[in-house]
Amino acid sequence: MVVAMSGGVDSSVAAALLKEQGYEVIGMTMCFNLVDSDRKKPACCGIQGIEDARRVAHKLGIKHYVVNMQKTLEEHVIRDFLQEYLSGRTPNPCVRCNQYLKFSFLLKKAIALDAKFLATGHYARVVRANNGYSLKKAKDLNKDQSYFLYRLNQNQLKRSLFPLGNYTKYEVRELARKFCLAVADKVGSQEICFLPQDDYRVFLKSRVKKAIVPGKIIDSEGNILGGHRGIAFYTIGQREGLGIARGYPVYITRIDPENNLITVGTKMRACKKEFLVKELNFISKPIKNKVALKVKIRYNHKESLAEAIPYKNKIKIRFKKPEFAITPGQSAVFYERDRVSGGGIIDKVLN
Image 1 (cartoon, helix red, strand yellow):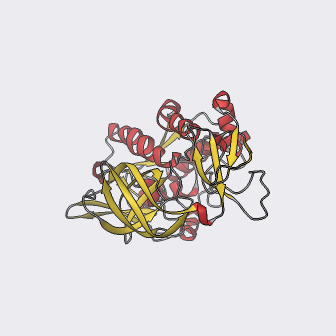
Image 2: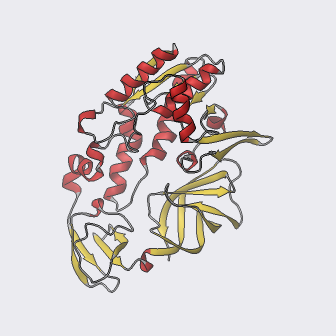
Image 3: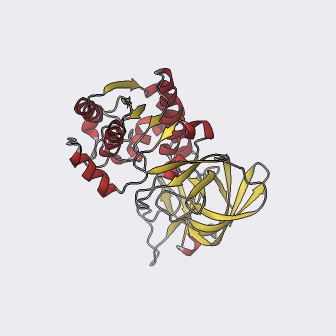
């Protein structure tokens, strides 16, 4: 059994629980050559995270390995992250990290060590059924992370364990104290581990500054209201930092990379009902006919009732009610009650 140990309380408790259950546990920590001193919060795969994971492994009496995955991170996560922002889209690198790093590269490392499973500290559940494996929400809905795991397939789920799926965050910290783990009160790491100073704009400037070109901000009628510093620095639904005084709040309603334009309007104009989803992944059966389900358009969004309609090689989602800031580049995840049926990347907002 290999446990992906980030040095945080969640993965540490996952390792401790599996060790207590009698598994032969090996800890494995991903290294991304991160500089912790530049961060407001500890990075999950930085120097401090590696040291904390090593200390926990020593406390539990398990083997611990560090795997340098900087090249894989660059190829599968950072490159996409930069290109998406330059294209006026807002990516979710955590989804790609799970897809390409943890449950592909790291899982292969685990199999090479003759491990039957890869376990992580995610708050989610894998349930075996007659027709395969299901991915379900965690007991603690406030911490549920099934959204970030929707791109896993049957072979990956078969090899995956999420020991925290039936615990709340409070219970996990209590378990950490019970196991006398030094990370019991450690603050949570930032979601995007490779961003210095918790600011994606700083990272973009350091990597693709020359490709970022200022442009115009307009209203829905095409009137010029001001200027922007480059579409990569903005996202749909954004209100702050626009430098526009209209006498009422305005939000970004559209980003047009082809003409380097940002359109703003009222909050109502930033609410839409229909959009297309591409790069689809279904955990069990794909959607072949129109169905009713619930859709989550970002991690902190409460999933809402919608129709899913096959549309060529994509899925058209039609919400029952308009939703705020449907953002191209983000993931739309489909739920049937507490089960993840699949999802994809938001491609184009229709109306």
